[in-house]
Length: 185
Image (cartoon, rainbow, N blue to C red; front, side, top):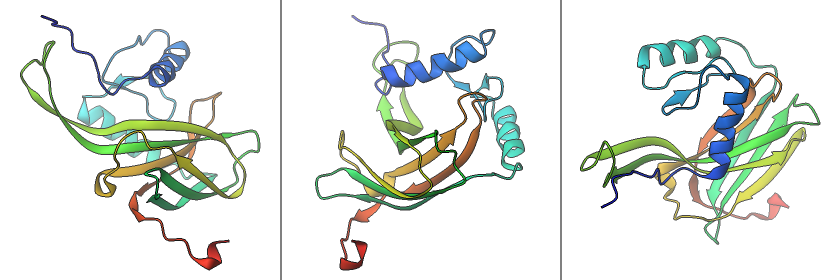
């Protein structure tokens, strides 16, 4: 009998991202649910009052750069095709593109929550990083799982790796099948 629960949504890349925050905030440690809001010190992600206050405070700061996702559609091969535009993004930047599943229901078979059914929100299913360039860009996230349009969104963000602050971000729900029109070329 295995009484250890393994997070089915974790992966090496996400763990490394979390460790990069620990290197920046060594006294905070590494735990779940941990939340870092715009490069500030880690907070307990399950403390709704503190997380809401932190997010509300950050959202009051006007952005100096922009990312605007114009399309996020399921391609014929099952990939998610994204078109976006950036403005005022430094040329040496990287843009992170994240495919997020809005809700996942899972029955837990082991660990402290064994026998419970948990609902997870905003589960990162894929994260890719691409070089930034001002203007229009497109990227395709390869199919790793069946994407039901109504339950997925794409988030694009540019993060300053020196301060860990998000300087531009946008989110768009994944829409229907991609339609290719002659004026798209």
